[in-house]
Length: 448
Image 1 (tube, one colour):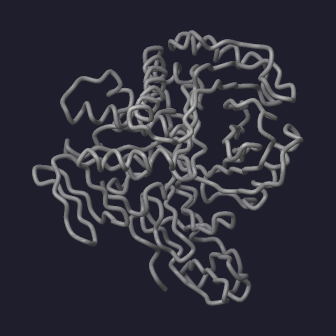
Image 2: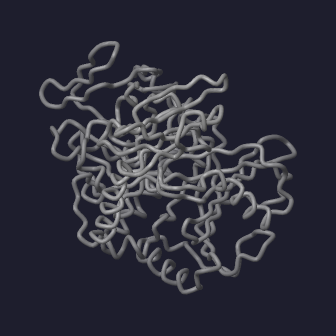
Image 3: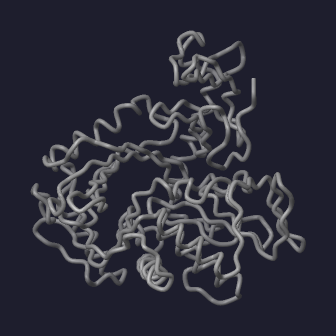
C-alpha cells in the first residue's frame, strides 16, 4: 500500500464516521434511479459493510470504540411527514424491514415523527485505521506512507511510478478519494462538496447515544463520541456547499453552533471545528470497480456520497472478488463506467455548473493588491492576464502560485476555514503553499 501522506491524513481523518445503511439520498430516490433491485442491493451492501467492519474489529481486536447504535431520521421544518412515509415504504422494499416510523427521536427537543434505523454503528476512524495497518503488516503486507504516486500504468506490465522508485503489480487499486489517474470520465459524474463539523462537550448520558439526521438541504448530522468518564463529545455536522463556490465560509461553523445550541442547550463551549470534502455522484452511489477506459487490472474507488466508511468497506469486498474472479451481485450497481439515464438531469446540472466556473478567468481578483492580504490568509489576485493565488504567512512573507488548477485549469478559490485553495470544478485541493492534498490534480500549483 502506497499512501501519499501519513495513514489517515486524508478525508478518513475528518469523517464523522456514521456507519449506516440509511442512504443519504434516500431509498425512494435510489429506487427511482436504479430500480427496486438496485435499491435492494444498495441496502444489502451497506448493511454488509457495517457487519464486515464489526467482524474485523472483533477478529483483529481493534480498540476503536466500535458500538452498535440506532439511527433516527427526522424532518427539517421545510419538509412534511409524507417524506418519511415515502422513505419508509422504499426502505421496506429495499429489504430493511426493521425500519419503523415512531413518534419522535429520543432527544430533549421534539423532532416530531421520525424513522428509526436499528443496528447502525459508529467508531473512531483513526483508531480503526491504526488497527487495520497493524493487521496488514502482521499478514505480510507492506505499507509505505509519505509516498506520492506520480503515474499509474495498467496492463501486462502494470506499474506505479513514485518519486522514490517504481512498483510493479498484478493489479492496481486507486483509492485516493478522487482518482488521480483519470482525467475526465469519472469526474464528470461526481461533484465535490465541502461539509463542516463542530465538536463540544456534553455531560455523559445527557444526549442519548445514537446517530441523528434531519432532511434539510443541506442536512444536519449528529453523533456522540465518548471522551472521558464524565463527558461525551457532541459532534454536529452540516452546512454543505459546492467546493470553492461559497462566499460565506467563515459563517458556516457559527451557523452550525447556533443550530446545535437551540436543540442541545447543555452543550459546552465548541472545542473543535473542522471540515471535509464529500464527492457526490449524480446517481447517489459510489464508483467502485474497474477504471473506465483503462486496462482491466486497474480499479478505482471514489464517489463516497457522504458514506465513505461503508462505501470504502464495500470496495474492499467487491474489488477483492473482481480480482479473484468471483461473481459479486454488487458489481454492476457500483460499476464506475455505468451510465444512469434517470440521473441525466443531475448530470446536466453539475456539468453546466462546472462549465460556468471557467468564467472566473474573466473576473477581477478577490483583492487588488497583495498588500490587502492579511497575515495567515490568502486571496486570488489578477495580474494582467494571469490569476495568482497569494498567501501571506504568519511572518508576513508572501507565497505566490498560479491560481490555475493543475487538473483541468479551473481557477482555485481560497478557503478561509481550512486555509486551503479549493478547485470549484472537480474538487482538487491544495494547501496554503500550493502543494496538492486532494485529487484529481496530482501536482501542486505552479510557482510564480
